Image (cartoon, rainbow over all chains, first blue to last red; front, side):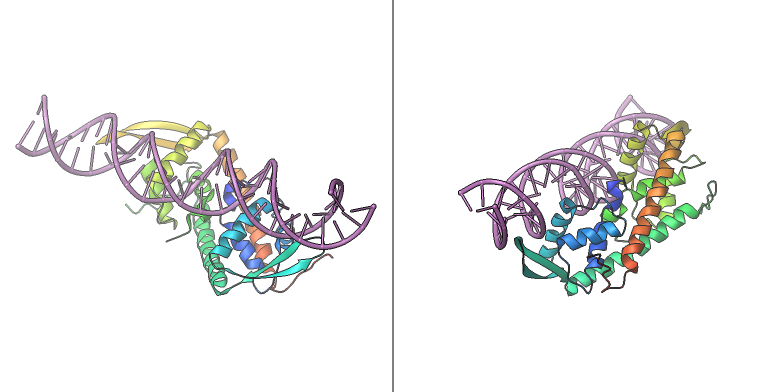
Length: 115
Length: 115
DNA sequence: TTCCTGTTCCTTGCATAACAAGGAACATGG
DNA sequence: CCATGTTCCTTGTTATGCAAGGAACAGGAA
């Protein structure tokens, strides 16, 4: 729930990229899925700027389809560059997780000083 | 190495808190240990503002000891509030990791739409 | 004294992303 | 022509990482 917003930096983008891998989604579906995965506070105020950023960066293929009583829905899926960015995130996440495991696996008074 | 700085937000603080649990360290030792755990680019420009923030927040007990050719070394260890903050970080990290696992464990075209 | 060196400490400014809040656009129906 | 509901987007605030640069203390050389 009340996660510190700072901890989400970079992570939300990686997750959205993952959701769009191999399927088209529009904003409402993305929000719904993110919440369903545990990011319960995920909101449009976060999503739209992120989508624009990634779109300008060439990470998406975009298609619009008319909607019943609204502007046309904007469907996103990953371009080659988007898949590349997703892969980079996965790698960095692996690295980060390992580093944290390194820090937290140390017994509290252990040093292992090399000097 | 060249990790996206955004991914580190919040994480570095949690790690520094963990390093100070049960032992006194001064800045140089903290930098050294963080780098040794894989945060190879961790620098004083990151550390000092963080330490000041946490100090003002009451997370530390601090002691100074004279140093050979420098201002006295400032040793940090966790106060009760610091341990509390560390515990909160651990909980939020667990949550975050689980959420990411939720996102990434979904088969690419699976929906599970409830509608 | 004065200057230099090395270690430790701290400050200032920039970049980025999350998030809140609010607003604009499109279609339908009264 | 206005109300409603859905989708889209903008603006401003905040927090943290990080680079760059600087100040303070001690010792030694000149």
